[in-house]
Image: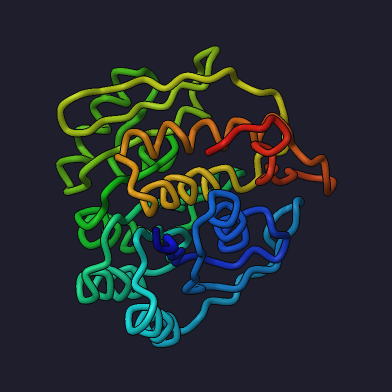
Length: 268
């Protein structure tokens, strides 16, 4: 059996809880070799983002060429892509290099609710990136931005999932962390069937990087050859433990615990 490889195209989080750092930690914990194309360097901690330094688009595409020339990934994910120019360039590279098993985490709404992407960048996600996606993993606010619809009920989520599927994504999961249900209910859609994945809602402020970590776990599982639904199920278990066994570091929204599955002896 060879070594499985996964690539993340995302921003760097100096605080270590999200972005590239969360992705690499997750890949490592799930026994997949992690590779990166860094799109931005951020100065941040548990209190928030203090500064963002975008990487030039040509530097990002150069990183992708180096990966493609020697270390073709078995799966990859996208995270923070800050402009329409970058989204189009990354999408073109994914097509050109025939990268497969793409997980699109459409990072566009900050923890405080601020929208991170300009309208033209949102359109680029819809027109260029989503059609390449094996699975897209928006939370409810991100799904609202992408669809232009208010999402309150499970039925609203189903309609949004259909809409995102029609944009070209093979599979959709709309995460339920922002939902009003007593349980945290994620909605999965494969174009034919809906599945509701429910876990107890955990009361903690230490949820920084949950979206990055969840999508990275899906990516690692796809790299290992799991089906999309199995990859999602196992990623859901992984992130639930990571939130449950939070690290309680920093004085703001602390990170999840990427090695929590080891504390309970769970093999993923």
